[in-house]
Image (tube, rainbow, N blue to C red; front, side):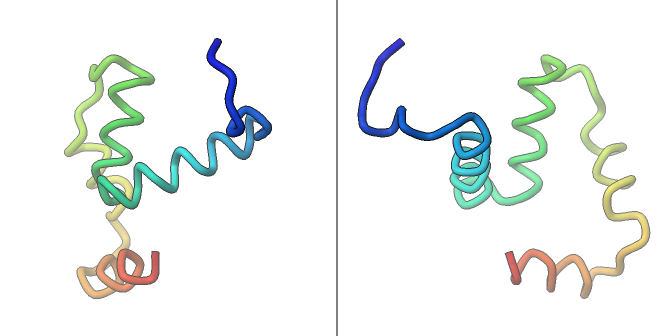
Length: 69
């Protein structure tokens, strides 16, 4: 394992910082797709997951949530 000044973070902090960077670079949907790829080697249907996540939200709510984050 490579050690540097960043190794002072605990596992929770690493996950939070990594997630934040991925969301910033990929957006929420890209982040979710990335996590699904890593966890399941891409075996799940992203469109079905997306429909489940946003099923009770209208486009204005989705936009507001994305803008707030």
